[in-house]
Length: 371
Image 1 (cartoon, helix red, strand yellow):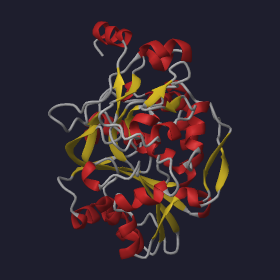
Image 2 (cartoon, rainbow, N blue to C red; image 1 turned 60 degrees about the vertical axis):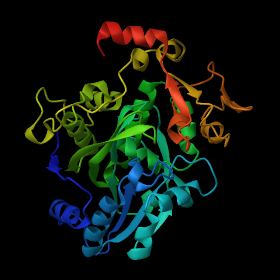
Image 3 (cartoon, rainbow, N blue to C red; image 1 turned 135 degrees about the vertical axis):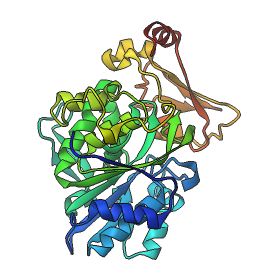
């Protein structure tokens, strides 16, 4: 693996985190260079929900970049399927406040017209559409949040780059890559296209999200560390080890090794990637769905369904669905014959009104496989 530094950090103290970041970043950015700081801003969730990158981490990085003389933007493209949804998400998540306190521009990435970037040796995409701001800046600083994820099992540095894809194009890509394996390769296609722009990735794992993440149905867990690397897949491998997750169980990390995008998975964790927790973080259990075709995998994938007493009939789920398989009656209804099980509805529901129901075959698979 490329160099990864993991450091214990117990709380969100901007001065302490700035000192850590300054030691890692020093000399990597020159005066006048244009830098996009890209946190995870999934939706309009306040910092105390721990769904988004904590604004204190973003602030610490912004301070260091400004002191180096860089021009700084802070932006993401959220999963919110409403007009100006990302703008609201940036405000609620505490990012817009940074634009009022520092000479930085905070903006939704979909506000800059999209451009196509070539994908070297792509498996799903030959070209990938991203915010035009990516082309305008010299560097991207990637600030992911360590979280469990229902589709990819784990979300971190590589997955966070999906927010560089603007607006509804993300839904189009989900439809284009409807199986876990295809979507894992699509994430790596995106990473390959963006890699020349990536300055470094810094993982916010002071408080992580386990269980039913990546949205507010996940459970915050005080994991008490930050991790840094110039290489996103290497950072993810180390962070998986640190929280007790086998990185080979995460498809996009396994495929990254097979595609030569990261060094082979080590048999033993290096010192900076040794487990840090007394008990492992809880992630969705692995399933055979990643290796099955679309038709067969439907029988072993958890189905989204509405929690009636929480649903406010806002229609977010129907609007965010990449394949329009949700219709709104008195409550949302899924056409499971068309569902691609991307779980966009689950992770984007602002009212935590969608749960995932495990099918019997998946329960049996886990019982006999021990996974």
